[in-house]
Image (cartoon, rainbow, N blue to C red; front, side, top):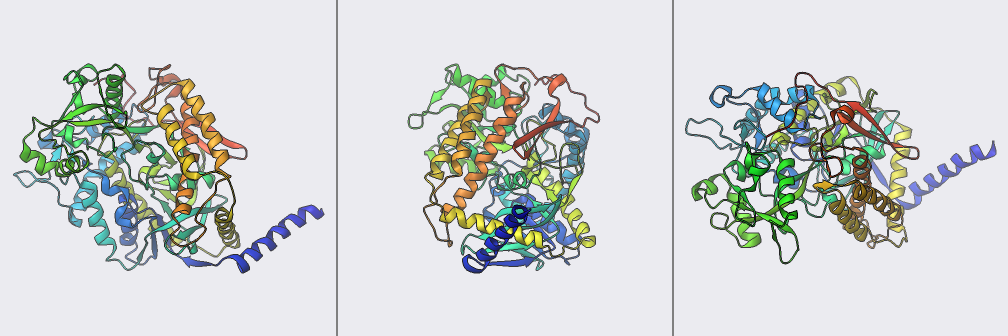
Amino acid sequence: MINSVHVPLRFYFILLYFRIVIGSMQTRDFDVVVIGSGIAGMTTALHAELESSEKLSIALISKIHAMRSHSVAAEGGISGVLYPVENKDSEHLHAYDTIKGSDYLADQDAVEILVKNAPKEIKFFEHLGVPWNRNRDGHINERAFGGMSVNRTAFAADKTGFFMMRALYDELTSHKGIEIFHEHMVTSLIVEKGKFLGLHMIDIATGESTFIRSGACVIATGGFSRIYDFTTTSYSSTGDGIALAYRAGLPLKDIEFVQFHPTALVPSGILITEAARGEGAYLINAEGKRFMETYAKSKMELAPRDIVSRAIVTEIEKGRGFSDRLSGLGYVHLDLRHLDQKLIDERLPMIRDISRKMLGLDPATEPLPVRPAAHFTMGGIHTNTAGNIMLGAGSGHAEGLWAVGECACVSVHGSNRLGSNSLSQCSVWGRIVGIAVARHVAHNKAGKSKIAEDKAWQEERRIEEMLSGKGSEDPYALYTELQNTMSKHLYVYRNTKGMARARKDLSRIRSRFADIYIKDKRRTYNANLRDALEIGSMVELGLLVAECALRRRESRGAHAVREYPERDDKHWLKHTIIQKGIAGCRISYMPVSITKWKPQPRVY
């Protein structure tokens, strides 16, 4: 009886001492908090503000400057059926292309929501000021994209994401109810009995901590492709929000499915947009042949990304690729030389500029060296079609918690995303969730919680202990080991032995991470602390990818296993759900939602 009282009292006095002697933490109250400032996060914040008639207090939190969020790197465009008669297109056809492209793992009710609402979002962004490319009739131009039956990808040159972000940012800054926290990092979600109560964040510039108290939170933090060393994504794509949700006990879905974009520039990994192939570029091997005829005769270079990526890797493995002298990376050529230079300058100006600056190559006159790079995470935080974060495979949803964009698995992409569907997803669910959050807050005001405040102080103590710790492990060395392990064993092709080795090695890396040493002990502008927090999230997520991938004994979409080369609908037409347990993780499965389109052989 004495011990059962003594431990909580001792912890209480330690916490009280920490508050008085060691640190200070301010408290802020907001109706809504949005974590992440890409297209998904900004769209959500904007629609919440509009739905509430500008009566809400909204915090938009970004660990970098909001306009540097990775969405600015989206190049190719956004999908939607704008002109069904002229393009011989329909919502039904867009849905079918998406579901077939997903290798039938997409939830079809979610896909129907996507294709129905996407055209409206493209027009909404037009009203915000996005300068869509237009044809001679004044209509928004639409280009071809991989896996799409017809041209349905609206674009603004090859800088679509940037123009959408600029329009959103300009609009958001005109609303006084939205406060943007640039360079602030959320380190912990406070969730009690399935209800969101608040969060803990650090101002990277000053090192000061804030407990944000709120009854509504939207996670829109993007993916985690930085767990690989060769990736198209920016340095901020570290999966923070997904890891935050997992650590808070919330489930992740289909985390084993990571998309590799076929055409990343060697050796930098900079994205060469699929729009280049949409405009007519060829893939050429070392024998000078357009090899995609062997792998997808009807679609050629415009087959879905998983198929094109496997084709490129196969060509390299069979000795029909090139080798980069400095990096040792194998590659093939992306050939735009036969395209009109005026077309390149009008529709692919950034690609031409990047190629010249990075390699001294002009794609109008010389082929570009490319190979597949980690690009997008199909899996993420488990949500329903309304964007609510779920509590488990068959449970209800958490109260006051939503996820939007790449960090969320709703699931519209299944095991393989079609290019240009991602910006549609961010825009469509940004509106859906923004409206839902505003309505939720109107009837559910956040109150003070002693539990939430105590948990915020516990998190502050954890951060301080990380800074004052005297461990022996270099977090940057562990990060290099993580990337090497992922790239070696969980790349385009996988095998059982390699995935088992990855799980073992990643488990060791995670154990060693508990003994890291942070060299910079200050709180102000501490890049070491920020990096360590990100690396911790990525190590956790890398291990979860390995855990789920090892168990899925089939090849489906981006998950291609040598020993199991065929899709197995009998045993594996289901979503993987992984959740933190008392001792490790818990994995379960749930059925795919099928409404109209029965699984068929996937042939292109």
